[in-house]
Image (cartoon, rainbow, N blue to C red; front, side):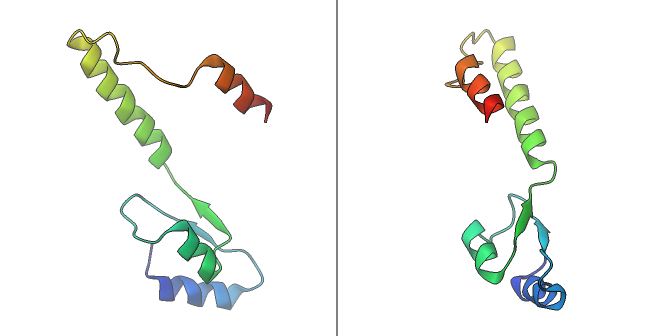
Length: 86
């Protein structure tokens, strides 16, 4: 993400059209800060996918070491069904 001044300039230049900003975990801006300057859409790119892959890789490594609790989660099928319904 470029600096906030650049984003603000783009927002003003294209108003009232919405501006989408791609953020990453390395960015320092908060959701509130981006909303305050007028960002209306925030994309996370591939980060949720790579996060899930990293968690899977870590669990697989623990399983390979014999840790049978490596896949423990507080997310159960009831939660998943509720998410799908919404």
